[in-house]
Length: 318
Ligand code: HEM
Ligand SMILES: CC(C)=CCC/C(C)=C/CC/C(C)=C/COP(=O)(O)OP(=O)(O)O
Image (cartoon, rainbow, N blue to C red; front, side, top):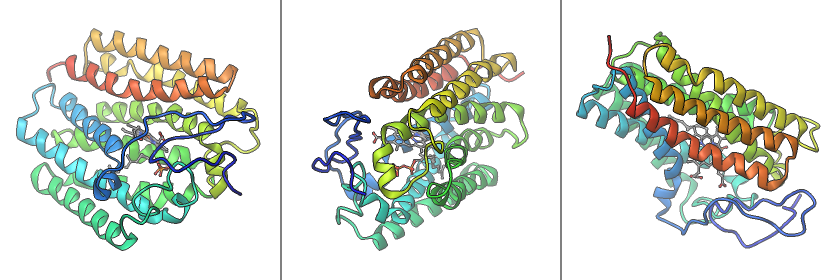
């Protein structure tokens, strides 16, 4: 099936038609083409992931992480994530070529061969894992490898068969919390690391579900199952967004209860989480393009703000 609203390909334009609307509306910035290797790493997402790992390392170290371990954590996580994101584009090149949002990517647009992208992605991922193993430890390297496996060999194929893919994809997206936590000397069994994992896991679900609704025509074109079955008016997906953001209101406060952060974080996170919940509730009552788009933008604003709150209000270790 062809996309319902053909327009010239625009890199990452996020063009998505509203059901029944006569003209497409856009969200997201139109980005000018960059070097194909740079684009393959999806720098926006990689950057967010690096900062997530860095902030988690900062909390694990009670605000006293050393400069070099922090630099190594950021570099290793960035390399590993960029490599995994590049490999995903190798695996999904045939689908990307058929979706309006992704057809201008480096591989489908012919700016780089799948083989070259595969070599680049594999090398970046391997160097990232090795970098972490050598500089900050085997555990953060193992979490990076686990994240890549979950992303490339669980989430990526599951997109074509099950709505559960949305939950599966949020696992590799949240594992950077544990990469950072263990890079700073935390244990893989510390409650604090898992609380941060839980916050980043829950944050992604409104992000992903809003996108699934906004991009549904593109996803239907290639048979990606990122929406609940039989949900034409978005009632179910709206309820799921509210449920996940409500869970986030509760879990978001846990770092302060555990003594990892102070009241500035506790109050700020609660305000952010209630804002996210309000955006999800507004969308759930009317899944219009504009309201769902607001959830997506709220999710993009949420992540740097919650990370900033963690950074400014981490408590020293006892
Ligand atoms: C299941 C997990 C996730 C899925 C399926 C997902 C999907 C997407 C998609 C499809 C877009 C592009 C929207 C557009 O066309 O404009 C996007 C944008 C974005 N996502 Fe996610 N995402 C997930 C998790 C994450 C994580 C873990 C991060 C970072 C910590 C992240 C950060 C971003 C950012 C910064 C953007 C906007 C900039 C860009 O497109 O590069 N996402 N996401
Ligand atoms: C090694 C390591 C830390 C890896 C983590 C990778 C990561 C951040 C996974 C989270 C999920 C994610 C960003 C999916 C993007 O969706 P998609 O691939 O479905 O997006 P698309 O539709 O734009 O291709």
